[in-house]
Image (cartoon, rainbow, N blue to C red):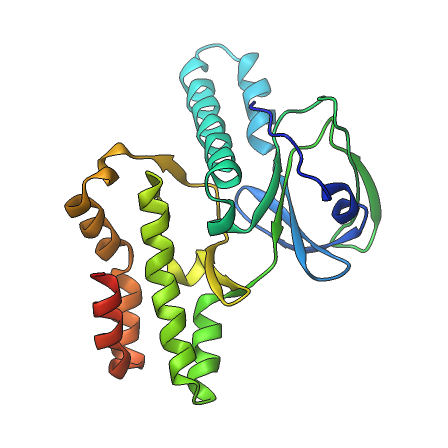
Amino acid sequence: MRGIKPPEGIQKILNQEFRYFKRGAQCFVFLSEDKEYVLKIFNNRHLKQIRFFSFLPFSYERKRMLEEQIDRSFQSYTLATNDLSNETGVLYAHLSLGNSSPFELRIVDKLGIRHSLSSKETGFLLQKRGTLFYPSLIKKMAEGRLEEAKEMISSLTVLISRCQAKGVANQDPSVRKNVGMIDNRCVIFDVGRFSKDDLLKDPLYAQKKKCYHLRRFRKWLLKNYPHLIEHFDRECQA
C-alpha cells in the first residue's frame, strides 16, 4: 500500500465525531459533526476473503483476482488524492497501515453505538462533502436560475476535460451517481475507479471519450430540459 503524507490541518478535521451516513460497495461512509466532510472507511471484506482463500487448495486464481482488485482500488485512491484533489474534493487517503502518523477516529455506527478506531489498523479516505449534481441542477431549474444551471453544465464538461488532461480515465462515469457540487464547481465523489490512460493525450480520442462519458446525461437533459442542449453541446465540444 502506498503512503500519502497527511496535509496540514487534517488532525483538526479528524478530531470530530463522524456519524454513520450510508454504505457503499467499497466503503462505509460517515458524516462529520460540522456536516462539511465525509469519512470513507474501507470495507475490509476482500482482505478477509484473501486470507480465507490462502488456506484453501486450488484457490490461487480467486486470491490473485482479489489482490488485483484491491491494488486497482488503492491506485485509484492515490490518483484521487495526489493528482485529482481539486476534481474530487479528497483531502487525504490513509492507505499505509501502521505508519508513523497515527490517527484516532471517533465514529458512531448505524445503531448509534460509538467506536474508536486506530489508523494503524483502519484505512480511510477524507473528502469534502457536497451535493449530487442532478438534484442540484433540478433545483436551480425549478427556481428559474437558468444561468446558474448553465454554469453547472459548463463546470461538468470542464471537470471531465481536466481529468483527461491529467491522463486519468474514470471507469464508472455515471453523472447521476458519482458527480456532485462543492463550492459551485463539479467534483467526482466516487473515487474508486480511476486509472491512468496515456491515450487521453490524443485530443481526438479524449473528445470522443468525453462525449461517451456524458452520453447518458445528454439523453436525460434532452428529455427534461431540451432548451439546455445547445449550451451543453457547445460546452462539450470546447
